[in-house]
Image 1 (cartoon, rainbow over the protein chains, first blue to last red):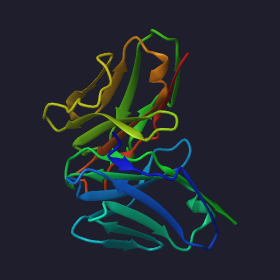
Image 2: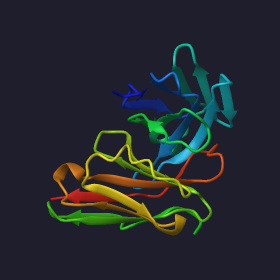
Image 3: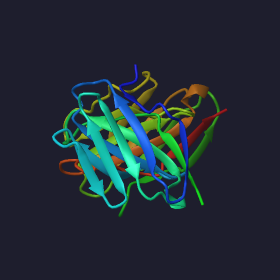
Image 4: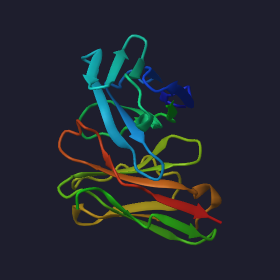
Length: 113
Length: 114
């Protein structure tokens, strides 16, 4: 039973356009959410996070939106760049301290020039 | 070191053999995690060490899997009598106080069981 779902295995976007990656979760105890980016042959790297007390967090070209009632979050990348091409993992945790993260299966983003 | 270091980066082993995977976390990080990523799958939690507390082993898929963390630093994940379904990338991560910025992952060990 997947508690964190990324239903799109892949996404293709043109350079300069917006990339929207989606994530749904089922566990109502989750209240801290993170996005990780992974290049081939490297470990995932932290990108951006959001606590359930917020509905939006922005960091440069990256914005994460959280809709708690729908148990849905999304990552927006504007404008998309070819260097953003990677696998993006959504992760969730019941608290922001020491706790294990539950990850989705990832979405491979391809940004073409 | 500056990051999480894992060794070996690649390991090919015969079915039935035992393997040991090593993780050197970031100095000072009290929490250490093992995950694995099988082909087409997400990151699957295996085990979690936090300071001197008993580890959370709830993600270990079978009793062939075990891990230890010596001196609150280096960790070794051991897989006994490897099976082909154990083939995956095994990722180690560590985190410091609060975990607000999530984990810092190593580059992983790609294990292939033939």
